Length: 497
Image (tube, rainbow, N blue to C red; front, side, top):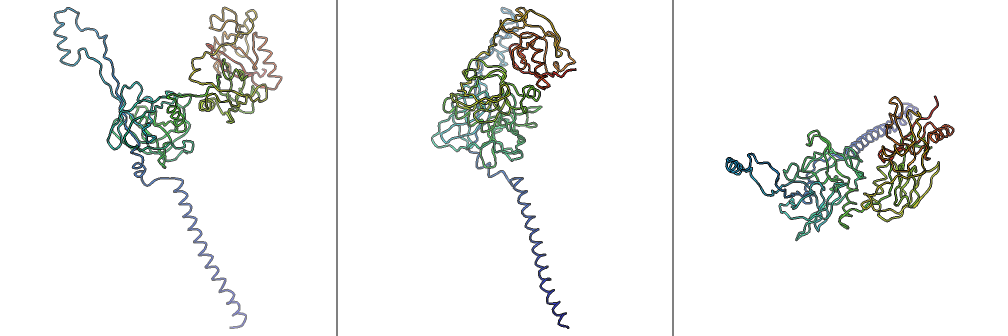
């Protein structure tokens, strides 16, 4: 072997060994990455092998609730035979034998669920579970029962707070952060479905932020089976914290084949805190009527997007005292951006009564910051929203404009339409069904009181507002329309033919 060949072999041997090492390293790296991805996938799924440990941990805090209501017997039943008839005694004896004769008050029972939130015996359930009950009995997982008294209720969120007295500390569960729950997270529901006693079902968070009918609704939607009797029971996350109170079922037959809704714990915990402290709710009150800002309304007002809450009316109260006006768009409340009316109502309701807050409004093309001291909603719910009464209108005349047949208000029209005396505006006499006005919901009997956020008393006023919108390069004009005293803003197109 020549010296050159020997040198060549000596050079290749280390390289061959390096290739082997690199190949081994590469294979090991691929294996590690596969293991990492498997671990990440398992963590993302979060699928537990079993719910048994969780159920065992939280079960002692979940309770069955039995309510008893005394129902008065009907007293207006008509006799089968005329009074004094020879058959009267016969039929009375027959009805009594069959239990259909005159009866006294009877006791009616209902079942539901709940959960203990403190060792000294506070229990949360749904208001509809205990509403109208004369007696409330709590059955605990261990088998003992205790009578409960009602501390307070909140029909708006369907939450009730009960209290039992126990000789020993009770097992309880804490509230979790419902805002941290993600769509797809595992959850577990517990309760007393169909009166069958303690029962567990599992599923996932199907959606968040659902609203059914209430102003303060913030429901977690879940596919965990919820039946009658589950009402008031807890919805747990995998840490054993309550993130919802099982409240409603959207189902064609009222059973678990449908959609379950649990009121979010971040709403419930605030309500429970107030019920515990005051025995009632004390929600903040801004004192305005509002509607959502649509894209065409935003364009008519010069807003850079459909956001905020458009003020349609301001009664005597906190907002009026602070200078908020009809036509303002509330963009921010107490440092929180306002996305829509529902968000504003919830945020205001959760704010302390009497607190002075900064409210940013959009008015006349620019923003203003106003300080509003909140009132209490419960005290203001029966306050009427008055209609302002400016100057007298001009003589009646009928004009077609924007697909509407319009006539200035006069005393006769005010009386017919139920409009406050002295109110100015244009009455809608007829609406062309082929026009945008009809599509946007305008109807005969509506009253237009403002256009372009300025009062109108005549057709000429309306035409001036339309001309101003066109000159400003806007495609729509914003109208304030009242129907049976209820105000709303409508944006109609003003593009020239």
